[in-house]
Length: 336
Ligand code: PHE
Image (cartoon, rainbow, N blue to C red):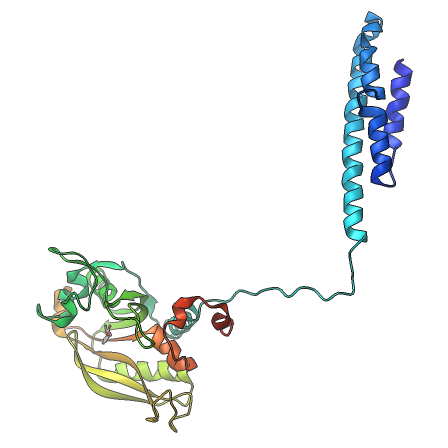
């Protein structure tokens, strides 16, 4: 009896099947209700006591080896079937969809890269802010229209908690927490209570820059921005500064860059003026420095800020800001 089991184990170990039918035959012969293994189990009670232990062990061995063999052969046959049947090696491979970064991220990184080369660090701050960091510390008078519900999303009144309308709030936090010299840019999301159209959105992104040290002048501001314009819009770019007004800078200016799409000749992106309006800037108002605890008789500085959506639209001639938020792959695919 013991010999019989050993012979069967050897047979199982050597068995191979050409197809699933043969394998099924083998399984029935060994493992079915009337199969070899089941029959041997029923003979267990007739085995003499001294052999019961060895018999039991060998029989269990036969059972597991048979089951393992069946499973392994089944797997092999299935794999073979898959690889040999419908496989046509001459077919071209399916095209792989390649992901790309969002154009806003790409342009943000490009701008960060340019200013990092000039020694600027990157600062970030909260999107939910208080009145102080968004308005008061930046010299906004109490009745300034930006403080109106029409322009700003308020979360709570008295004390005012709101969604930041610009990332200048981050600059206030930097001025409060660091001593000059300060050279930093703050990229981030901002929120304004505006109707959504092709030209404006209630959520968009900004990058604002801040430079504070002794003897910082308007010439430093102009040179920094010219460097940025040449790096970002192309080395032949020209800039011009037009007088403007912001509560936190004095003097203030708007910067235009020569249209990179038509080279200044005039096209429908620059509305045939040859110039694109790209950012706001100015020398930091001494009141702003003082509010953040910086001595304005020792230090001076400049600041600038630009919308990333607008910057991206101008650089790539995109006509509708809503495209950035629609998540249409056909649009994103163009920015690999
Ligand atoms: N904070 C201004 C805005 O949101 C931009 C700006 C920043 C202007 C710094 C001047 C100086 O429009």
